[in-house]
Length: 354
Image (cartoon, rainbow, N blue to C red; front, side):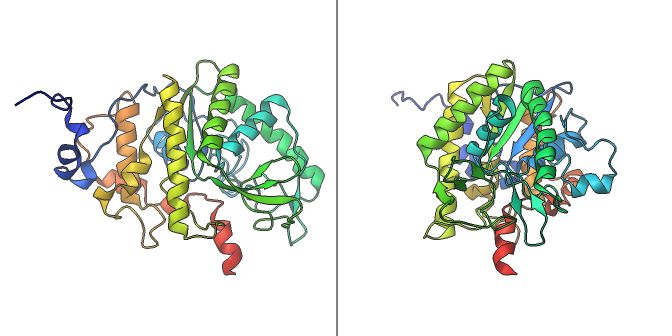
C-alpha cells in the first residue's frame, strides 16, 4: 500500500479513533498546551460568563486566583452582592473583544468616554460599562465616577501584574455610542439609561474587526506586561437574544464562529497565547446536547466538570492522569452551584419578560 500524508497521523487526528470510539465524557481535545500554570502564578480572568468556571475551579484547587479588587473588609454577603471575585476586578461581563480593549485604553492610557452614567427608573445611577455590579446603584453621577476611578486602579493591577490572563470571548453583537464608538455590555434601557437612536446603535462585529481588535489588545497588553501568558476560550453559551432579523440559532452560530476564528488567529500568531477548547467540549456532536440544561442554553454541572477536568489536566503542573476523565463525586459537588454564575446578558430576557 502506498504511503500517504495521513499514514503517520496520531489517534487524536482521526474522528473514528478520537471521537467515535471514545465515550463522550472521555473525549479530551487538548493536544499540545503551550504552557502550564503553577501555584505561584497570578491567574487573572475576564470575559463572558463561562470564564467564571475556570476561576472557581482553580481557586478550589488552591491556585493563585488573582483578585486585586477583592472587597477587603466587606462581609461575604456584601462581596457576593457586589460581584467581588466573580472576575479579577469588578468589570462585569466583557462580552466582546472591543469592550476589553476599550477598558485597557481607559485604565492604562486615560482614554475617556462621552457617556459616563445611566439613570435607572428608580432614580439611582449606574456605570454604563458595568451596570449590574452594584445592585443598589449610586446616589449621584459623582458617586459613579468615584467608584469607576477606584475600579480602574484595580484594573491596572490586573493588566500589569497577572502572570496568566484568561479571557473568554462571548459575543459579537453589541450596542455602542454613535458619539465615540464606546461599546456597552447591554443595550441602553435594559439595566439603566434609555435607548436613543440618535446616540446609540447596534453593531455586529465581523471577523476582520474582531481579529484586529484582539491583536491590538494583545500587543498593548505585552507593552505593559511583557511576560504575561494569555489563555483564550470561547463561551459555549448561546445568545439569549439576537437583534439581527434572523433566528437566534443562526446568530449564535455566526457569533461563535467569528470568535473561534479570531481566537485561533491570535493563538497562531504567538507562543504566549493559547486556546482552550471549552466550546468544543460542551457543544460538540459527541455529547448530543447532554451538557446543557433543559433550556438548551445553560451549561449543566456535568458539562462544566468535563471541561474543567480537561483544563486542569492540560494546564496545571499537577493535573493528574488526563486519561482518567470519568465523572466523579467531587466534580458533581463542585459544580452544583452552576446557576450562581453571573451573566449580564440575562437582563435582556428579564427586561422583555416582565
